[in-house]
Image (tube, rainbow, N blue to C red; front, side, top):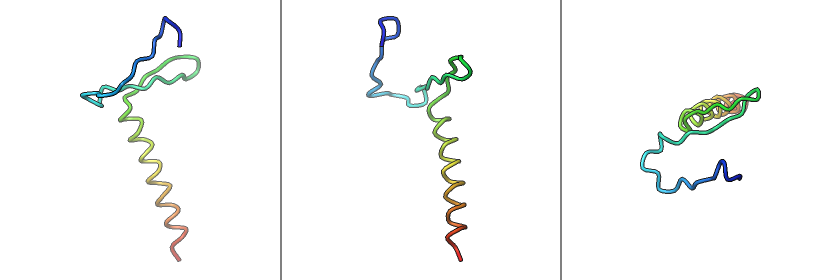
Amino acid sequence: MSDKFPLQAISEVADPEKIRVVIFINGEMVHVPLSALLAHMQDQIDALDARVTALETP
């Protein structure tokens, strides 16, 4: 990474709710709490799992 944006390790984070993820959308940087992003992904995984289970059930 450049000197303008140095990367820092996030080990030993006291409050995981403070971790934010930067995403580039339509040429713009936005940020979201990691927990919110993971919660949305978990909801999608749960829905997919339910659909697969329904297909496997006779």
